[in-house]
Image (tube, rainbow, N blue to C red; front, side, top):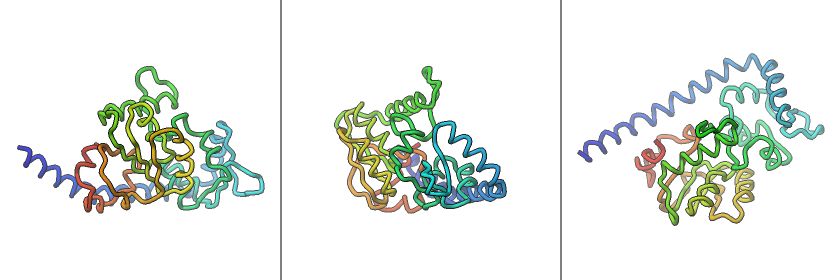
Amino acid sequence: MNVILNTVEDIFVTVSVPLYDTIVPIFRKVRFFILLPFTPILKLITDHAFARIGVTLDSDMKSHPDMVILDKRFYARLWSDQLIGLEEMYVDEWWKTENIQLLFDKIITEHMQHSAGYYVNGATTYAASQVEKLKLIASKLELKAGMTLLDVGCGFGGLAKFMADRHGVSAVGVTICESMSKAARNHCIGSKVTIKHQHWREMEGKFDRITIIEMWSGFTSTLRHGPWDSALYRIYL
């Protein structure tokens, strides 16, 4: 029975990953090009929305905004891909900031989270929903003290720090963004967390648990080769 289940799982992974890699980028591109003509309107809405949380946007560095917009397509891509797009555009140099730590102190939560929340157990705010999300992830991982955890696409290290501090694991976070890795190291000072600035494909070693939070589109069919097998999909799903 296990042989049959493993075979079915391997077929699913082999078929679904290339399909996902093909379909998702197409949908993202379609959304982006649909929104692109509405850039002037999106700019007004975006500037107003960010201003409400104390974040200023401008294309002129001389005004010292929180975010310097370097590409006019920024607004369409932000509304198309939202927070994932915001991170990708930073890496792609569509926007920059003089102080990324200060910026994200304004727009993300105490646990340095900026992905989807989980509104349960009385959570009514975005910050509270992030805590519930991290608790949910921890419960699914069935963490135990002394385990090793790899967080792929770790962002600012919030998940790695949460799991290390609350569950006693040794966590490693990996990100391709240099500025994020620096901010993550600062955030994780005093915790059993190691932050690495490198591509996930270059990672070596064995880990008891692996997390991939809202960066699945960054994976390709090459995930099926080398040390990355279907076990990683089981952890993710």
